[in-house]
Image 1 (cartoon, rainbow, N blue to C red):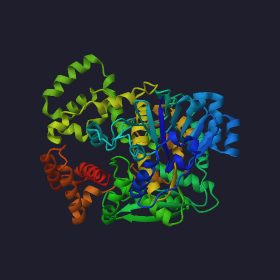
Image 2 (cartoon, helix red, strand yellow):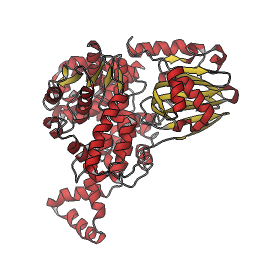
Image 3 (cartoon, rainbow, N blue to C red):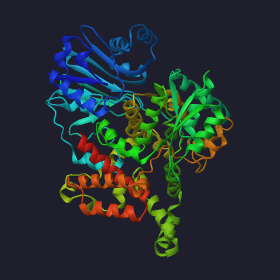
Image 4 (cartoon, one colour):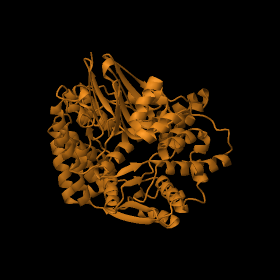
Length: 600
């Protein structure tokens, strides 16, 4: 017999289901513990989300999000009686194959108590999270890790491997979590427990096809698909848009304004720091589309105020520094009466806009060089001083993907024995992060380099990082958020575009830029990618309060004993004497880790 306990979104199951099922979910003493933790983490803010549920004498169905249904009968049921009822009816009709019928943004559970059966799943892009614990027949799951560790039978033991992964990736990628024996669902993944046995798998992954359309026809299709995607997000008068001035936020803002009878409200973040402020591009987009732009400039004082709150709001360490501007942008929009924002996240990861795509494509050229020529070239490059750049290129080009992308990772550029204490390092499998990367990269059903990188980024860059950043910061600010560029019609359309259209030569987003000529402002089309970056390293060097706070947290993390004290001292020295922005990244990661450990 298995025991099944669960939490969903921000509500405890016991508060929304009949007493028949209460014994099968988290015991009452968990409720107070979790609610206190969650209230503290959100500082009294955040969205109150109530999932839709349905139960009968056979099944309990709970679903959160904004699902859609391929089966027209289920769509009718959802409209008339709610998504929970549609989920239960879909399960009765299709069994586990229900997963092929449900689309959109969702996380759900289906439980048949009499059969000791549970099925949980999340959407194809990983927008709605779920995590679970399964040991000795006991199955506990929840939308937040804090919910799961509130269960009295689960220890909140932090794993050294997760700390290593955090410093490697700047977050902890799924399926792992910071806690021992607790795992996050990956995009398009399901987990079922059947009479004490666990089974998991992927019910969906993107299929890369080749469009029969001409490039001109695809250009027309792109504009149609963008309109469908924005409409699918169901904007209303209280919906605004994030606007960084880049391709995607500008596209979303422009399409939204094109579809709206009212003036769109757009929100942008600026920084009084050279090389970081992109407000001029946001202004260009606002003027181009005649939208109302609201500007907020984040200050070092804002950063100091937000760090503890943000670190506490995440259920595990999270090191993406642009969480700070994302939070202030959402909070700023909330103060202007908005209840929902449209975000541009995802365009670079479906239309090939990240610089690493061009860089890796350039390295891949070497794989097509004839072997005989390589035998002649490599010894010469190795011996001749002024060919050092060529030698460096050859050395990197010979590394296999996807590990080649991590050449500049902090944990590869410094010997690990200099960074970590020896007893900590003895507990670590240093190859595990690369194994995690390879597992996803090799799961892509294509041999095309660009498409395989796009597939990998859908998990690591979007689901594990950017979406986690934006979702949680919007929740903290009391704001809903939707992603037009990540609607399924956009995913499928982009997957059909040939990679040599996506990138002509080494030009990023070639097809997209060409297709958006005449729609986006010229300044937008010509700008390089940046987004809401945070000048933390630069500010730390020039603002004493931020410097004092950073050094106090570095002292705190030093006392925890898993890092070499000499490494931290050297990091501070390099930040002061070298590239403040570059070394500020690792300092930020350590500060956010220390703050998370303190607040949790």
